[in-house]
Length: 113
Image 1 (cartoon, helix red, strand yellow):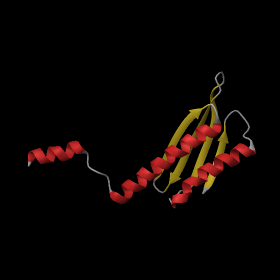
Image 2 (tube, helix red, strand yellow):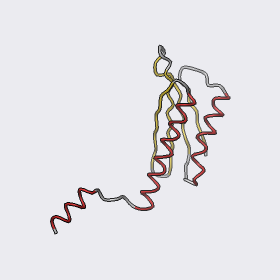
Image 3 (spheres, helix red, strand yellow):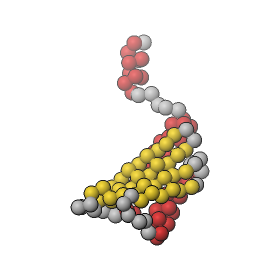
Image 4 (cartoon, helix red, strand yellow):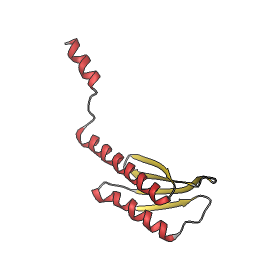
């Protein structure tokens, strides 16, 4: 999987880049067909130093996006990777099993019958 990095308004250190890249590459462990991932790092507020990590993952017919903020880039990346992982799980589960009907719709059909 190819991982692209963008850092806005600061220079990204190689150690931080390698640590985040290792975390993002764990998404590929479930044999999901991930084409590539874009990681965008930036400061949301210069006063409080809130660091934001945005991860965009491209799979076959969909783009999954997760954006997380915290005091540290690694914490933000961890949270964003967890969100992308859950989105991947939901997407492939729905693709495999089909979308479930809502309970309200099923109850209306029973009442009409």
